[in-house]
Length: 346
Image 1 (tube, rainbow, N blue to C red):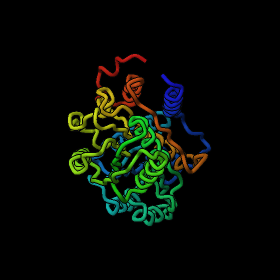
Image 2 (image 1 turned 120 degrees about the horizontal axis):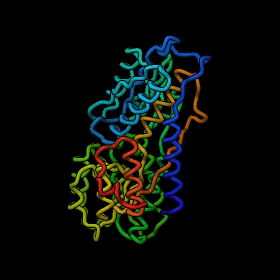
Image 3 (image 1 turned 60 degrees about the vertical axis):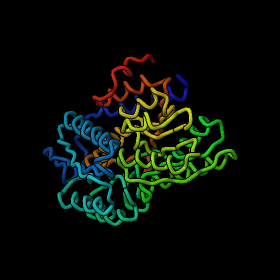
């Protein structure tokens, strides 16, 4: 295992230990209106982009797990209100933010589909005493108190850099980019393009957007391949199509190289079979667990994070550390990890 992989996995282990060690708050902490001295309930609304996108379901798992840990360790009931819309829609997200405020929820954890359409709702929530924390996709001009996620420009650049290595520095590249209005994805595209420009032998065919469901993403890859048969590489700045098995047979690794963001259980088969040799994993479970713990600290203990921008580091997943990362997913509560991967040596 490389030093980089060891460092990334060690970072995840430290965060996991921190979450597991949630301790009871001091008696002198000033509770909010939702966390009274008598042990009143704290409800945190979690609003991802889409409940059909598996990365947000993973964030929900993390949020609910740490809510249970906090409830058990602090004796203050912490509950998650899952208000993610079924399909990606920033207007619906804004409605859900207002719903959380009207329902008396103590805090909001939000990933913005379109920051411009959500900033007003976020500011109104904060003005009414409800703290808002962003994850995955920020609304930096809003009154949110913190953001937790990867550096998106760096993520796009890293994905392209991995792809260029696989392509030996030459070929025609397509970028799969999801929702064209999402600020995090816009920054990833920018980073990918800037990285590609460093290599004279790399040409970008285009940036291809799509509805962020596995089926729509896979269909877009197939459509683009048919329209541009000279494409020899794909940079997936989100791993949407890898949640289906379709591209295991529809992509030919001898003809096209692929590097992708994300590494959840369904996606690991692409690494094992060599169709996508490199996955850059966002630890999406931690979006929920770290986000809820940070909101709890602010709501119950009046404690702000050290920095407003809380960085998440990518974890590079290849065949070399496939077993180790599979076991990490299992410890996070994923029950659909391939048992064969769990048996792989360190």
